[in-house]
Length: 130
Ligand SMILES: [Zn+2]
Image 1 (cartoon, rainbow, N blue to C red):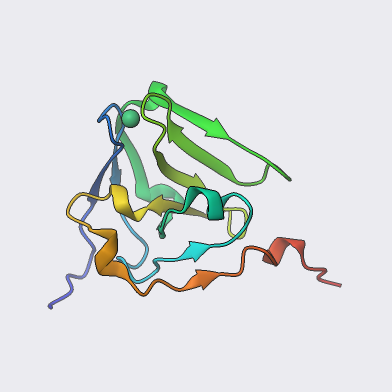
Image 2 (spheres, rainbow, N blue to C red; image 1 turned 45 degrees about the vertical axis):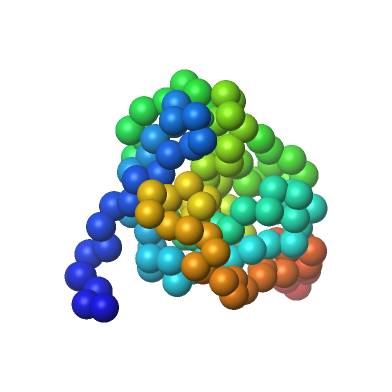
């Protein structure tokens, strides 16, 4: 595959179609991760990374709802109609979004396996740094 200099924007949609985002990923699908923190293990989604300026809401901004828990540092966005997680602002790196890989047009999450796991149980922000 000839990788283009700039990765093309992906179209991301929730299930019902109320929300559509245009997403510029940090490193294509190479950043795909699962996470076993108390939230992600329940959600079960595979996330890929995007920079903060890499997400543009095409439609449905008013249909996105926010879930925060614990320290409240991470911001998890969902479609309030179909409940599908679209993206979240990371706690481990607030300069990044995690994006639901399975919501990207043309991406079958099956093709991403094996997806590495993030150690969310021992979250980097929970470790003492001195
Ligand atoms: Zn929806």
